[in-house]
Image (cartoon, rainbow, N blue to C red; front, side, top):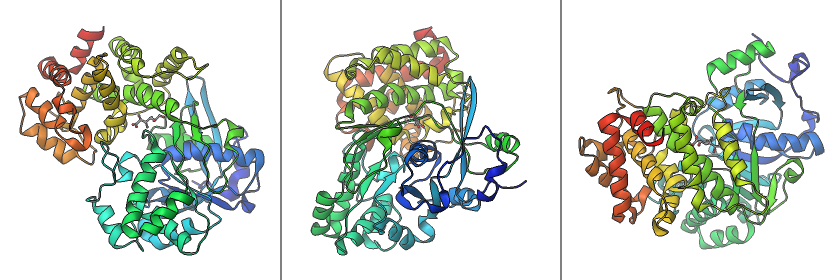
Length: 491
Ligand code: CS2
């Protein structure tokens, strides 16, 4: 089967939206670290819209910091890929041309640093997932004991971490007295730009205080809120598109029609006209980010653990269960809903209903297992910050505790049928050990897991209402299973 590439674009079906700019003249202006499916469906999608409308040298040089897999999918097809929006109304296909090349950090770190240091690059954006910041989720500080950080502080000429690559590139610009670039975090972290600035500056301070000071005064770190549901691409997806295009597209991405991007308008050396293609450029992202992280991502994580352990592979299947719909509605109205306030003119009830509709999109095979990944890095901002506010304000915490209890049940590594769970989490071993030594004693399991300060800080283990309610849910889960527990409580 022929492969998608520039030479065959004319052969594509007429209903595929094509780039309407001269891609052969496109120059790079952005380097992206972590060119996974989410970036290709979100930031690259918006940048493509700018190129289609206004042109400009905003081509993207993508990079992977771990594996050559995405490079091997993209480069043989001239970094072109199909973006497939799927919903109950059918699907829309768009050919994205904004990505010009893809580098693999571990293969040639110096080349990636040099590309980032090239002054034609105005923005370095990131989707490296929560764990890519090498920080302690509870404190936000750079984890100086992280093996990648230890390595990069000793070998900044060949970094392995996103933070190391960023500082190495900024150091080259600093030494040549050139302009800094904008560091644009596009990960699901509260105040993601501030989190990134903190770890970058703390790393740079270990190199030189002058460099750290220069970064603080010349680089910018806008906060962003990013939103689009993008399931991991499957072989079935690729087979579907192969039949549709009569071409093989190894790098295709499936996503929902909805997308939203809110960005603090704080750029060191210009940006694409994203504001003219639907991106919200604001002075303060926080209110949008809190609503999204708590109402969408908090519900997502709660459904991921309870749904997976109830035997549901996809989020849309969880949302077919009346008890889970009621759980999500209650969570959005109470535990999370009580802690968020909507900006003027924002219909938050319509937003909650839209979220539930998005979760119910059967055309998206969004796996509970995928969302369950990296819970130790996700729960602090998705459930625990809400929990702290509710504890302080004597508000509702029941479903937050249910979510934490379901996560503890999940990281125990054994499901309700006695089968092993593939727990993908940087702290998987530590979490499993905390469960194993307390097997059969839910109260002790809760105490042991909640004592892990990197996730829970040092305060929550001393919150009797939280500990008791979480223990109560975990006891019910072991006694009658999660599905029955949720049905008893919410049906
Ligand atoms: C999901 C997010 O995998 C996950 O943790 O909750 O990727 C979610 O799909 C996006 O944040 C939606 O914008």
